[in-house]
Image 1 (cartoon, one colour):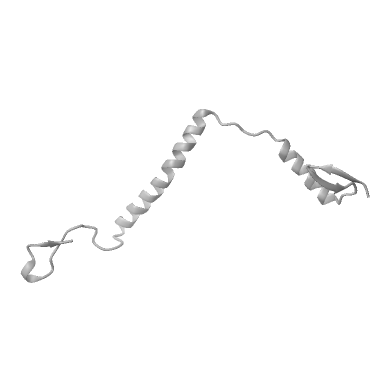
Image 2 (cartoon, one colour):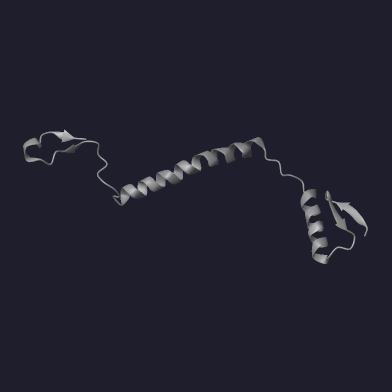
Length: 90
């Protein structure tokens, strides 16, 4: 059998059609040029990437406050005992 080197891997010269198609597609992918971003686009992407999680968490927090999920969020609440109603507890 005769071998030839393609893409750093040894292949037979009589390749199956699917295998041959895969090699051609891989060569096309490797031959594509890499897209370079301008400094402005990189900056905008970085800002959006940093701000997006904060926005998602804020929207979730606002939704939970809107539907009154959880206990009373106040730090100090009035004491429920009759003798100590003028005091607040944590």
